[in-house]
Each structure stands twice: as structure tokens, then as C-alpha cells.
Length: 405
Image (cartoon, rainbow, N blue to C red; front, side, top):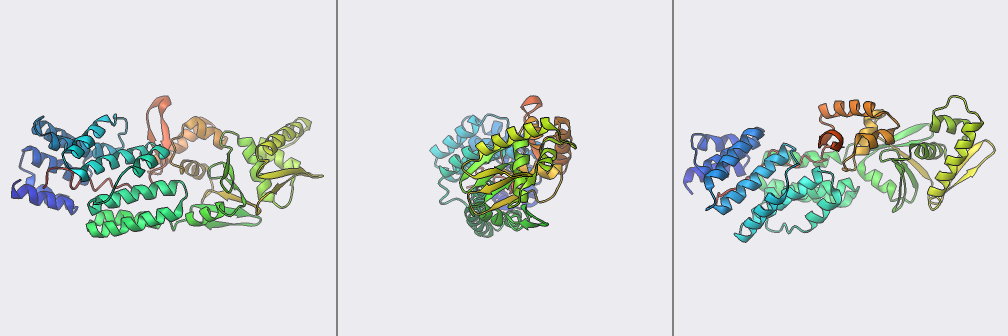
């Protein structure tokens, strides 16, 4: 490798995209094209970056299998940055196998890490956890080690495992400092700052309390019956009863929990669950049916008893708590529902929020414009997800992914 290519590669590894471009901007050999593609990707010019990487791959030809595999990995990460997630992952897996067979372990692990990040962006959290657990990150360059730890932190945060998330972010911070890349250091700092922001509100008689993620996790582990208005369900210890698709039952559970230890008047429950301003015998009969359904669903978590004026909930554990989104409004409820990282359809969101699909679609479009949600797929296959809790480094693309050695 000539000295200009080596100098350009070192500039990219340090996050100096402009410095790398200055050295190879007038060259059209495959190595220079690949470096230009990575530099353009770091500058956010993803379509141009992809075109350059494809041109470089064609220039390397079939006789330079290792270099072509590195181009495939680079292009896959550009697609990840562009959130184009529909491509089949087989080419990336084949490139990883080629890199592994040729002794390029770091870039093979990088390719597999890209596959994990793709699963995470698709909302396939369980699959991403399994894939990440199979990776042996020992000996990775500091920049890739930081990305791996950011991904691990993202997965832990989605499951409210705050301790593992904090440990992963601490390791990411250490790796980013060793890498010395300002953009990566800023990204890790932003991820750590997210843990200090309000994530939910605890509602109680006469007021509310803002909670951080670690406080939410502690509350869920406290043994209390938690009516979670963020994810629409009931939790007591390890037991989870989802009520996403049963909005009437959730409305009743929330009303009873907000009033605990007092009871709730039947008229108030009817208004809350059915939206009826005036109740009649039909409403009262329906209320009895729905209370019976709720009682059967949560029998291992709490009792629901009839009182002279209504109903009262008696939790088996240490009291009852209501968790609400950090701010009020339909958009806040949408963000709370999407915070689990899973992919949601508009019909499921509409059912959970007791709103029309058109109302939900309008809210999602506004949130997407502000970068607060994202979508995958089209037409009826379209699904909505929250943005990653960490940015997953879309501005530090493959500083060591091409033949720099």
C-alpha cells in the first residue's frame, strides 16, 4: 500500500474525513475510491458513499476477495446509516465468513456487529440479544469496542436492566477515550446523559413525581402492583399482564389503582372505561362483566372487591403504583408504547390508545418529522419504532474496514 493511501486511512481512523479526502480526492483506483466512500459516509453523504463503495468493489474484482468483502461490509453499514433495512443479510454473512477465513478477525466481528445493529433497528430485540451474545469482542479496535458496548447498552435499556446498561456505557466511555474520536466520545456522552432524564411519572393522590430509568426499574422490582400506562399493562415482580389489546380493562385497572387504597364510584368507572356521561342499567351490567374479566386476569396479582358505592383493588404485594409517560398527550403515549423497541402497526397503536387509525397516523407523521419515531416497510407492512436510545454511530463508518494494513 502506498503512503498516501496509508495516510488517508489513518485520518479516517481518527475521524478526520476531510483530511482523508484531501489525500485521495483526485485518485480513482479501487483503494482510493473505497476510502473516499467511507469519508463521504462520515460526512453524511450516504448515497454518494454507496456509489463509491460499489465502484471500488467492481474495481477490486473477483481476484481480490478480501478487499471486496470489506467493501460489502462498508456498504452494509452505509445502508444501516440510511435506515435501508430491507436488503437480505446473506451477503453480509458471506462477507463475514470470507473475512474470518482470511484472518481479518476485527472486520469479521464488525460485520457481525452490523448484523446485530440491523436486528435492533428492526425491533427484533430477542434475536439481537442472542446474536450479540455470540460475538467475541476481545481484541477489537477501541472504536469498534465502543460500538459493541453501545449496542449492548441499548439492548439492556430496552429491557430496563439499568445496571448492565450502565456498566456497558462505562466500558463504551473507556473505549471511546482510547479511540480518541470526538464524534464517538460525544455519542457515548449523550447515551449516558439519557439515563439522567425523566423517563416516566409516578401518579399519586394530589400530585406526581418524575422518575429516571433507574428509579422506574427499582419501582418495578419493589413488589408493588404497577399499572404501567407507558406500556399498557400490569406488573408485579416478574409477572407481566399486557393489556395493550384490552383498553377497557386497562382503563378500569388504572382508575382503581389511582384511587387505591380507596374505592371508586361505579359512575366514575363507567365514565372512565366507556366514555358515558350518564350511566344506565346496561352500563352497570357491562361494568360488572368487565370487572369480572379484570378480576380473573389479575387474580394472582390482586383482588377486586365490590363496595357499597363501587369497587376497590386489593394488591397482594406492597401497594399499588401508577406509571404514566413523562408528559401528557397522545404523542407522549405513542412514544411510551414504542419505547420497548418492538415494531408496532398503526392498528395496534390505535387499539391501545383507543383512538382512530387516522389520528394515530397523523401523530406518527408529526413525530417522524421531528425525528422522534421511525418507520420500516410500506403500505400494510409498515411498522413504527422508536429511534435508538443511542445513535449507534452512523457518523463513524468503518475506519478500519478496508485494506489499510
